[in-house]
Length: 461
Image (tube, rainbow, N blue to C red; front, side):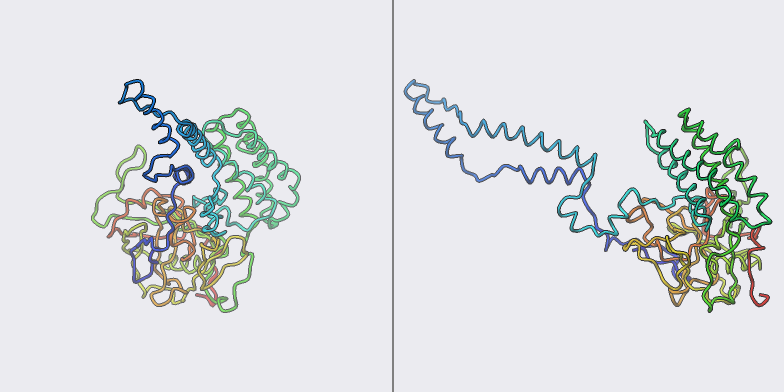
């Protein structure tokens, strides 16, 4: 497992000590076939063949052709036919194993159920910050059903060549039916002062220019580009409706953390980055090189209220203005100015998938199938480093941007550090800048441009 980021250690190291390296499926099929049909080599002639050869020698002696020893034997004919049969079976085994992979006997006993789940293509861990943030909203069950039905289309669009437009059409019709039939239930989950906005969004979702009916027409036209654009627009509307349904936390914080700063929902932080050496960042499309670059991060207080709240407070206090960044393997990490921390010892805070409240001071075991609502395995994920003295706590100040790379990932494409850090947000604007940041670059300013009304500061902090 990769060494964990902490305030004292800022480098990633990958060890394969516990990693199981298994041969590819086609190689397993070839190996099994080869073992089953490998000819026996005893170093001795087949007695039936030898007997036939002796007989032929006698016959050739009588006819005067002493050098002629043609070997004609029933076993040799059978061997040739068996080899042809072996080749056919080998090919069939490889084809079957590639088209419908099944574990061989030794694989069946060596792969645990948790690993089997992670190897499965049905393990749909969010791979973008937008998707992870949308799934983290604690919204109405009807809206979640609409969301799930539409997100399934995202995976169907990845299928090359003949795309299953019939299945996509069924998914949209299902989502549209829920939206129409459960309209009252959906709007009832929205606070009174937001109902008018919710009604407008609902109409936009069903009948708008980029709504579900328009998406249905794009699918019937079998235009994948139009489907992709329409799907993204519909999912954005779904997320807006869900946010209206989630005005605050869906759970109570533990008593010991009631006096900590917390973020009851979403917030947005904007970073302005400058080069430490005065050089410029790459230009935007069609633009000029930039002396400064903008990065925006959406904070998720629904899943990590204490961590996001502590970070939002530090940003609001100007604690990150002027800090230096360091570029390390797969991360951009801030310096650790302990003197500017909030003074709170923030516990490790991770919400597991399928749960309704976070776990505190506890990491997740990916090996046992535990996955977080806010995964680290997303390019641009933002998390707190570990506390210098205990991994049960996060640093009260130091954070990092995670530069996920599937080439350095483990089981199921998950980071080796998955479930070990308090992830509290994702980069949504300026992701391309993260790979350009070098050690010595400076955060000229960090501002809380959204969500200040959701930031709760007990005791007038």
